[in-house]
Length: 436
Image 1 (cartoon, rainbow, N blue to C red):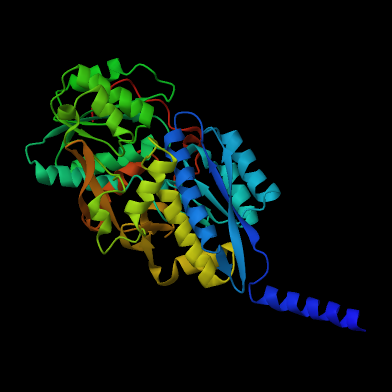
Image 2 (image 1 turned 90 degrees about the vertical axis):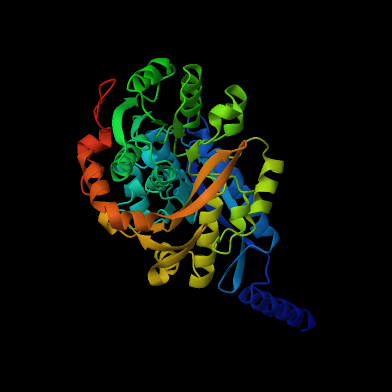
């Protein structure tokens, strides 16, 4: 009787502890589906490393509370190598074998129709860095951190306001689903800023020689060279070729990862004034009251200590998305995708890293699944990337949305055009130099 009573008491205590979240923690898995090798590595691996910092901090504080239970977070990476067939294999593995509850993606060429179908079939919540992936046919696909390429309009607008003498620009980008929507966005931004696009070039992703490309762009004597959303190896090669040719105008791009290497290989004077969209997180402006990324300076310090010389545009982005997801899971008391998504979008407003933002996108993407607010304009000054201002994307959109929609539609990039076979194959190749 005594032994049986002790056994009964132990069972009752076990149930009570489980009900109150006091039992041993259970793992909650998040998938990281992105190219961790190859040309797009700098937009994935640093993001995975930032996510590891977030994971370690969350787990050290007791994990994620879901109802009355607590869960430790486990990150499960899968290297797609930016190959659609690997992305498809990866999404199946993460869902069917690993049992993830949320998936982080770079998107673009990895987000194929087949990947979308798997996500829909499993009602999986997925975050992309490319809002241009968004479609009403993928209701659980969200862009809560990055709003590429729409924020690029802020850099163009700021640059023109600082220097009204800028009249012409030449632009190039790789011919893929990162470069193409960015081309359309920059076209609209230059049009709105009354800067003439005198030359434009799309190059194959296999390109290794950039001298002739830069020669073609400089033949038009532009005031500005724009590298669009070129991947780090491309951006570095293009910038060095422009330096070799003595370019004296302004440089503009979406990102400028590892800019210190470019300063070392060109000159501080050449890189001074380079405008792009991503700050280092030791920037004093990230202590502004509007910023929602907790202790950004400390995050940057830890990142650089643990993963030296690897900070990039995406180092913080996946971590920011994970924090939004964690908060929504805890409010929803569930990991069920539609419950979590409802909590994320509750009231139509969210806490973006750079301030309060709205869930938006219906006119451009067919669904309000992008979290859009202010975005920093960054310039290299005295050898450091420093925020010049936080610019309102929605303010620009309210004044120039017709131009952006027109340019997106001209390139078959609107949400209602993207199901065509032409889009799924990629647009046909452009001639070497195309005047606008």
